[in-house]
Amino acid sequence: MGLFTKKYCEFCGEKLGLFGNTTLKDGYMCKNCARKVSQWYSVGKSNTVADLYEHFMYRDANKEKVDAFRVAGTMGEYTKIFVDTDARRIMVSTSSDFAKHNPDVIDLDDVTAAEYSIQDSKTELKTKDEKGNSISYEPKRYEYKYDFYVTLYVKNPYFNTMRFKVNSSYVHIDPWAETASLANYAFVDRYTPDTANNEDYQAYKAMCEEIVAFFNNK
Image (tube, rainbow, N blue to C red; front, side):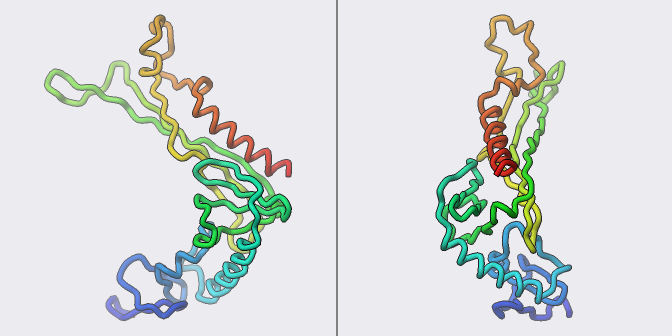
């Protein structure tokens, strides 16, 4: 096919624009149809049109499970785990509008393991010299940011992991700012983040531990 050859979605027949479409091994998928794909399923040039037709059948069947889902409890903050205790099923979603987003319904017995991780990053803080130029502190100062992730390992024909962020916004720690008001600041470590005494950090860590314990002891 040439660059300017007209292309059409294999699933709805829509004429495709130049950008935002998915290229498959033997065809194309428009943006609207791509939104119907499970968020945990990575689709690309290794997938055939037949693969996606089968996946859409799976997604249609999933809608029936969503309709039958009865939320008995939730875990998490930004991304929530919705639990149907009677049916022993879960859904993972950032939205409670299940009809619109059609989150994958997973049997509890199909969750084989769970773990959490804390992703950190640090950024150097700068000051200004007498000419207004940005310069490093001496010694250098940093602020630290933390995000908390849970990974579920599942048995599913289209994906085997579900990794999601638990916190709605990163946890920020500036060791210098947090110790500047202390009377004995000269004897305090002003360069190492004190995660053990940061309430937000410990709250999200405990949230992750609760989620992981739920799945590993189900």
